[in-house]
Length: 259
Image (cartoon, rainbow, N blue to C red; front, side):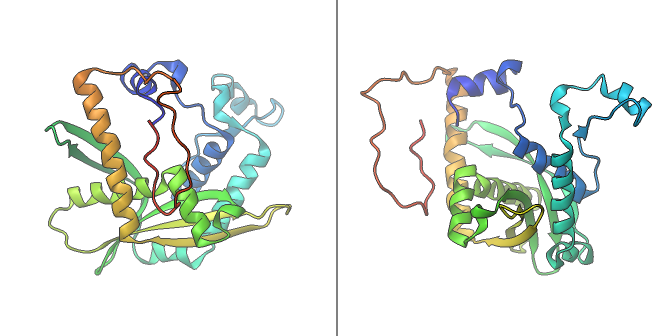
């Protein structure tokens, strides 16, 4: 989505220069996912030699990107505690939820190209009547101040495509299972202008939103399949002739204007 050449250099050539450098927000989300799932977070706070000599020596071998500040670590703990204290999270334990679940499948393009797929869902819960695929998110409070704002944020960040993708993979892995698959978000936020007031929110994503998001995802996978088959990875030249004409449009549908 960031360009043909970028995709080729990152995912085909695996060039280190174009690999994603985790932002503070990405690190925070990763730590919260790990803490909620009972795993050891990848990131840690640097220690002084007098605090822990063995850890100090071990941290010398770590990459600088593997460290976070003490404030980031404390925020991650607070987000995790906030989520774990909700009845929504406690529902997972009561229903035997599985965290960090690997999903695999494939997609066949209109030209017959088979693309292997995989993803890791934060949590999947199976009950007698339904299957629930949930994703944890850590965001700014303004983004969840209303349902419509959360929809806009999910469209901008691709969160709906992510859930739709997980749902498709789960159904591929369980083709004979006729239970409905329900996708949801469990969100934590730190309220702005407070020293440490955290809140949680839950959202259920309806099927029509997921269907639109999956159709959008399929379009991108078709483009990728075409580029691979034709070995065409050059981005379109930047000219005034191919400039996008901006216009007002409803934000309740995902835009396909990106080239």
